[in-house]
Each structure stands twice: as structure tokens, then as C-alpha cells.
Length: 383
Image 1 (cartoon, rainbow, N blue to C red):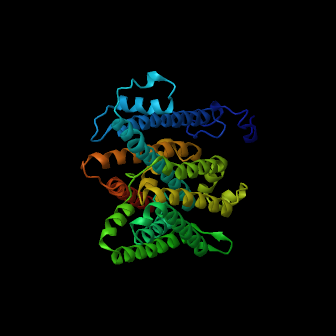
Image 2: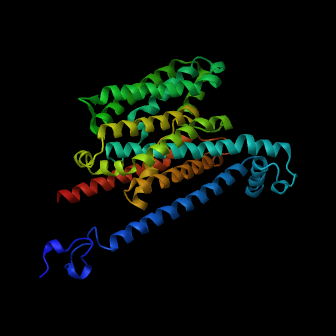
Image 3: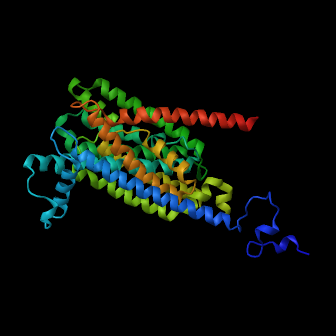
């Protein structure tokens, strides 16, 4: 007679278990499902990357200077591979070459990097507070960066070009330090206290920004408002360095903490039992999120809802494993913001719409839909 102890994952079969019993850890169906999700995540990442390349090519070819996407791609390839004459037939004018290489391509790449960075920051923040409605702005980093940038703008246009990025990053660093100082208590950072601290300090920094905007000279107001709403219109190749370095560092963090973050989603007690240093992990994730957000704000201004929309969609598509969420969210965020920038350039041409307006028009309805869905789930559980 077979005893319950004989039904181990290595010896038990599906025939030995009752028909209505769900698959156990040792069931062959579970590894198959996991493998299928992994392939789905890989296929989705590759598809999003291909779509991103297409959108970048469209962005490089769209504008007042007429140029096809193929011609724009050949111009870029000619710069990257100057020894290959077949990459460019030499029929492009200096104006076309300058427009594509010095203006359109940098802004498209900066939008892609900013979207990837903000999306990854959203993944980190949502993991820390265990709430899919969280985003990078919830810790007050964007508001702190806004104070630093606006402080420079009100000093005069001569100082803006050289110092606005540095001041925005320093403002983000100060905001992060303030949130940590207030939220850290009794040797730990509680998610609820972190959220409340971030919201309060974010409101405080926003009030300072509003005061500076109201008291500055009239000619500075447009620059302030355009920066606060986000834009990559003045992007240069040099602006790509900061977000790229921050993204590489944060991706390294995600690679080394993927399993620990999965454990953290179950609960602090379970994660601690599995050997995860919860407070240390939260601090690392928050610092990485602050680095990503502050770096993006310093070169692209305040852009909201990317870190809310994209990580949640990635979670729905590939599951809750952060090792699958991160690549989908990073590439998806790059595609999302690069597409939003293309819309911002063309929807009211020749005028340009700030990026924050486009992302808000997409993100706010999505946020409300999430809230409605969570409220319905809570009512169902109460019944």
C-alpha cells in the first residue's frame, strides 16, 4: 500500500493523485508553463525591440525636412560605418545629414533611454511598496529635481544651458536623502511610511517650484513650464551619457536581485526566512530608482506615468517574476516614450506638445482603470 510519503516529486505521478487536485511543484505541467512564460517574455522583448527600431527610424525621418525612414537609416549607418560606402549613396544634402544626425536621432534615442529608465524605476518602486499603482514620482524625486532646475532657470537664461542638468540632479539627490531620513525609523523603511513621506515631500517641493515660477521674470515662465512638463527637443548626443550609465547600473542591480525581489513580493517575513536582507534590498532598489529618475529629469524634465503604465502592462503580459518583467518593461518603456515623442512632434506641427501632456493623456485613464479594477476586486473579496 502506498503511503503519502511515497508521493514525492521525484516518484509520484499524475495517475497517483486525485483528478481534481491542482498540479504540484513536481508536476510536469508546471515546468512546461514556466518555460512557456519565459519564451513568451523573450519573444515579446524581441518584438518590442524590433518595433522600437522602427519607431526610431520613423522619428528620424519625420519633420519639415522631407526624408524617408530608409534614407534616415542609411544616413545613420553612414555615420556609424563610414568605411562602408554602400550605406549611403552620397545624394543627401548637408541639411538632411545635420537634421537627422544632430537633431532627430539624439532626441529619439534620449526618449528611448528616458522611457526605459523611468519604466525600470517604476518596477523597482512597485516592488518596494508592493503596490502596482506606485510610480517614481511617489518618492518625491521628480519634484526635487524640478526645484533644482527651476532655481537655475530663474537666475537667467545665460546660466541655464550649463547648469540646469546638474542642478536638477542635485535636487533629486536632496529629495532622495530627505525621503530616506524621514521614512527610516527603528532600523527599517516601511512601505507605507515611505509612500506617505514621498507624497508629503513631493507636495512641499512642488510648492517651492510654484513659488519660484510665480516670482520669476515673465520670459522665464515658458522655459520653466516646458521643463516641468518634459521635453527631449533640445537633446544632444552628450545628453545620452547620464541616462545610459544610470540604466546600465540599474540593470546590473536587477540582475543580481531578481530572486530576492520575487521573495519580497510574498512578504517581509517570508523573504527574511529565505535569507533576504529586506531593509538592505529596499534601500538598494530605492537608490537605483532615484538614480534613474533624477538622471532622466535632469535632461528631459518631468515626465509622468511611464513608470506606472509600462511595468503594470509587463506584469499582466509575462507574470509576476521580475526576471521576466524587467526586460519587457525596459524595452516597452523605451518604445512607449519614443512613440509619445513622435506624437508630440507631429500632432500639432509645427508647434510641439510637451511630452508630459502626451503621457498624462495616456496614463491618467489607465490609472483610473487600475483603480476601478482594484476596487472591484476588493468588493469581490469582501463578499
